[in-house]
Length: 214
Image 1 (cartoon, rainbow, N blue to C red):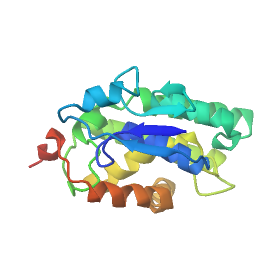
Image 2: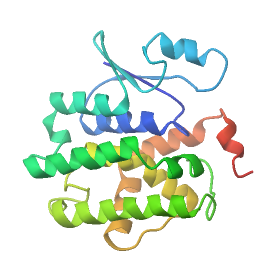
Image 3: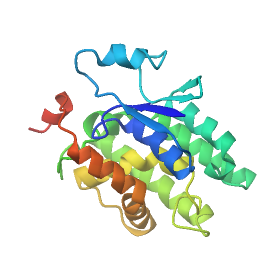
Image 4: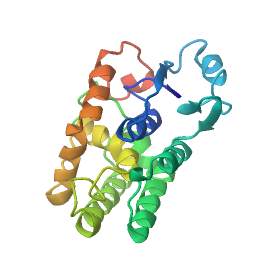
């Protein structure tokens, strides 16, 4: 199994697939292709038909898009989704909402593990996205989180979906209170998240997002 990813400092989509694979216990070769440099698109296209990362190659079978990769991994390891049907449906719903939405947060608070942009990036639209995310975290923890520290107790694809948000909140100084704040701390303390952060900070490549807030 091979997982093709982009820069760990920037590629939120790559983080989702990578974290799901790690938490799912899969052994895979990590192929990191720095984004937005000469030749990067050609290198990605040699692995991914969409020309984007992440892309999973499982012994010659290719799956692209982080949501599809997560579902594929969950079929191979069902522990990546809640056992209860209702909880599983909600986990898929919030994962899909994160995958498709929150465009204001994405554009104004791009993932950048290396930087401290506390106080930057806010707007009424961004703050509305943040409020919705906090509401999701609070609701899932209250309804489904009795058996562990994650959204549905034990780690699931929903946690992988929100992992880049945890890094964003850390970078931009967003500090939720209550259950949402405790959940944020849980994600940031996850050993695989910490491994990703160490690697992200060791990268030397920069893309225009690096200069977004000077």
